[in-house]
Amino acid sequence: MAENYEKAIKTKYIGKPLTLHDEKPAWVVDSPRAMSHIHTYGLLTPFFQGLTQGKLMATKCVNPKCPHPSVWLPPRADCPDCYERMKWVKVPSQGTIYTFTLVDYAGIGVEMKTPYWQIDVAIKGVDTIFKGYLEYGKPEIGMKVKAKFRTENPTHTILDVCWVPA
Amino acid sequence: MITFGKGNLRIPKWSKRVFMVAGGCTPFRKYYPEYKLEELVMMAYKMMLEDNNLKLSPLEIKDSIQFAVYGEFADHFQDQLLCESKIHDYLGLDPLYNVGIKTGGATGGSAVLMGAQAIASGYANCCLVAGWERMDEVDTRTGNFYISTAACKDFETRMGRIYSSYYAPMANRFAWAYDLNDQVRAKIAIKNRHYATMNPNAQQPGDHTEEEVLSSRMSAYPLRFLECCAMTAGSASVLLCDEEMAYKLSDHPVEVFIAGGSHTLRVADRRPMDIPLLPNEKPGMYDAFLKKNPRWPGFESFLAARFAAYLTYRMAGIKEPVEELDLVELHDAFTISDVQTYGDIGLRPYGQEIDYIESGDAYYGGKCPANLSGGLLGTMHAVGATGIWQAAECLWQLQGRYDYFHGDPKWWKRAGKKKPKNWTSLQVKDPKQALWVSHAGVGSHVTVGILRKAW
Ligand SMILES: [Zn+2]
Image: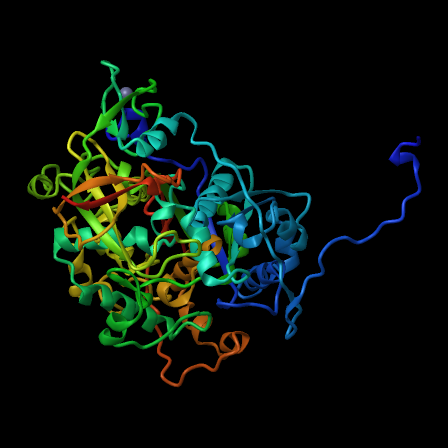
C-alpha cells in the first residue's frame, strides 16, 4: 500500500458555505462558532464537591510566619502573602448581605431566569466577601441570609450554592 | 498585597524623557461593515501622521519608527489570534518589532505605558502605539457574555454574564456608604453624553434629561442603559518619541508620565488595608472615615487606581491634582466607576466624591473638567483603543487643537454626519497638564497618565 503522501489526490470541499449576512456596502458573511472546552477546578475541587455535600469550604493560611493569615472564600490553594499551601476549613453557612444588585438584562447563556437578585455576602471569620444570588426575597445591606445547596442534581458550578433569607 | 515592602513603593523614573506628538482615531460606531479591522487601524494611523502638524512627511515618519505597541482587549471579538501581525504588516512596518498588550479595559493605557518604556529605555526613539476593537461581529448579548469572562469564570461570570452586574453592587454599596443618589449618577451620564454631541466621532451623543436617564431600561439595578457605555468598533493611535525626535517632529510636543496599579479580579477578595496617601493628603486624615468604612477599598473604591495615582503624581511632581490639572479624561464605562475614581485619584478626598460633580468642577468652565471628549458613555469604548484615544483627546486639548479635531467640518463629513448648528467649542483655555485614567475589570488594572505641555 502506498502512503497517502505518495499519492496524487483530488480534493473535495466538505465545509459548509457561509451565508451572506449583509451585502451592502461590503460583503459580511456569517461566521458560526460552536465549540466546547473542558475546564479543571484543580486544587479547588474540594470546594465544588463541598457544595454538593452541603458545605461551604474555604481555605485558611495556617503558616505561623504568614504576615496576613486569612480565610479565603472563594478559596485559593496557595497563600498570596507567604506562598504556603493553605488548609481547607468549613465556614458558617450564614452571613449578611454586604451589597447586591438586580440582574435585569443579562448576557447570553444566563442560567437563572431574569430578573434575579445577585448578592455579595459577608461571612463571620472569612476575610473576603462571597458573591452569589438570592433564591427568593428582596435583599438589603445588612440582611441575614443562609446558604442553600443544590445537593441533588448538582450543576457542578458555583450555582450549586445560593442564599435565602435567614 | 495589603501591606507594602519598601521596594514596592519605589517611584518609577524614566531613564530618558518621553514625549507624545500626535494622535489619530476613527469615527466610532456600533457597526462598521464598510471596513475590515486593518482598514480601520490604517484610518486612525494615517490621521495621526497627516493631521497633527508634524514637520516630517507621513512616509518620513514611517521611516523613523522603530517599535510598535498594539492594544487589543479580546481575541474573542476579533476572532483572529496574532491580530497584531496582520495590522503591523498592513501598516507596512515589518520587520520592526511589535508587541500586543492585553489588560482588559486598561489595554490602551497599558499600551501607552509599554510604548513609553520603549522610549525611556532607549530601545526606540519613535514608537507607534495603536489599539482597536471590533465588537460588532457578535450580537450585543454575546458581546456582554464575552466581556463577562473578564470576571472570574469560576465564581463570578455565571452570576450575571454582563459587566454591569459586577459594577452595580459597587453602586449600591457606594450609595449606602456615601449617600450617592440616582440624580448624581444621572448628571454624569447627561454631562458626558452632551459633550459627545460636540465630537464628530461619537457613537452615542445626546442631550438627555434626568428623567430620560433614570427611566431608561434597567441593566443591573441601579445602573440603567444610559449609564453604561456601548460596544464599539474603531481604532486609535498615538506617536511617542524621545526628546530629540519629539522636537524634530513637532513644535508642540507634550511630556508623558504614566504608571499603573492592579488589584484582584474578584472584588470579593479585596481585603481591607491602609489607604496609600496622595501627595496632597495628610497622615491621619482618613482616621474618622476608616472608622465608618473599615473595609477600604471594599466595593466603594479602586486600590488599582489609587496606587497608579500614587505613583504617577510623584513621578510627575503633581502636588494638588485639582489645582494643577487643567482637564481629565476618566474611564466612565459606567456612571458609578466614574464617581468611584474621583476619590482614588484625589479629585476629592474619599467620602466626598460627589462634590466633584455638585461643585461644578467637573464641567466645562469648572476647575478641572472631566471627559470633554464625551468619554466612554458618549463617544466610544472600542476597548483596546480606548486608553489611547483618551490620551489623544488630552493631547489635542493641550495643543489647543480641540476646535480643529472636533469642529472642522471635514471630520463631521468623514463620520458621515453634519456638524450640528449649536456646536460649541470645549477647548480649555491655555491648558498645561491633563490626566487620563485607563481602567480594566472591576478595577483589576488601572493606569494613570499625565501629559504636560512641553513648549
Ligand atoms: Zn500565608
